[in-house]
Length: 447
Ligand code: HEM
Image 1 (tube, rainbow, N blue to C red):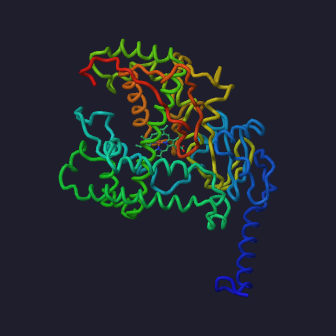
Image 2 (tube, rainbow, N blue to C red; image 1 turned 180 degrees about the vertical axis):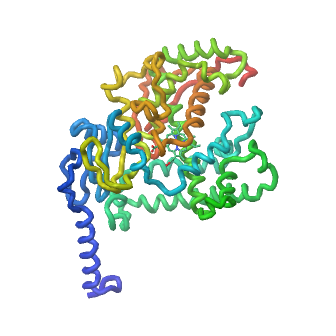
Image 3 (cartoon, helix red, strand yellow; image 1 turned 45 degrees about the horizontal axis):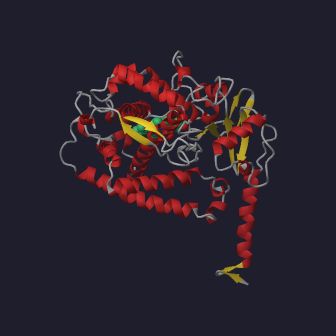
């Protein structure tokens, strides 16, 4: 008998080979290792069946049953999950270098690019207003901007779903649920937008010489003239542009939406924030970035929002480059690390009334979000921490300050129940977008 042109015996041999490879991968001898606690695993899929659509919540539930350090086998991928402050410090600070696996020079490029192009939020280094062109491009309502947002939502969803094919070799080839096909289609659409942006930047003949006029696409393109980065292909540069756009836009927007939602549930927070804005800025001018250091209550609102709704709930997966012992447990080389920042932010051993939204808790506290206080690490910590921290933090603080100074916020109906459920994806947005009424509170000429 012949199947699709191949003799059945040859097909059988291939299947047998694939199956034996899979069994070898899944059952590598690990019995001599002192691995962290682990729930019972299923054949082939390991612990994948324990992950629901809200992965961070499933992992928090597993931590409740098995402790703050858990070893999981997600298909063939060995994974450790960390769910408390002390262990986060251990993995991200003490063993930072070991759990640092990422594509070669990319972290340096991210830092270098953001440093070259960001001199403050609204102003360049000379203190003059500057147009930050690529970001402005996507903040607009242009056809490309709307398409980018649409593709971004698709990407975010597809990167969040648990796709068995990503964890079990050969299953991925079948693409049973069509995720790969959808991702390729989204990538093709994204590629054509990025190609257009790159072409426009390459065609720019003037204005690239001053720091104020360059944006991060200019900086990335100029890497080709730098001898340390000449090996970078055009595809890598495109991927870097997409990374920066994806990481730099959604996280700040999602945080502001959560902050406003919490404020609507806790109206006295709005009252106190507006009193502070009136006192520090007044109502005759718009709040500016220079006002932010004095807006202590607003800063506390932002910290409290990051605590309960971190946009990267399990950070970006890190991977061990070598075997290591952490708190007496063996962690093999090539083990993925997930840090459940969402669970750490709600851990009652760190936070009183942990599930309550209470910005006041930060007013007389030194806890900050910059990666030194491991009970609150929405930007990660150490070598892999977010390179856009300063820009992201300022964007959220200023964005929220402008919204609270300019408008009185209320729900469309006093009986309306605000839906606070989440969707797990590239970030952690609200499942149901916020609908609120904005009533102007500043003089007419300021709008
Ligand atoms: C609310 C704002 C933001 C939050 C909460 C945030 C959070 C994060 C987190 C948690 C990570 C992963 C860190 C880790 O795995 O240890 C990350 C990575 C990253 N972020 Fe941000 N981010 C924000 C804004 C931005 C902005 C504005 C940019 C760029 C302009 C940016 C660029 C990046 C990049 C390129 C990475 C990947 C770094 C790597 O893999 O080494 N982020 N961010």
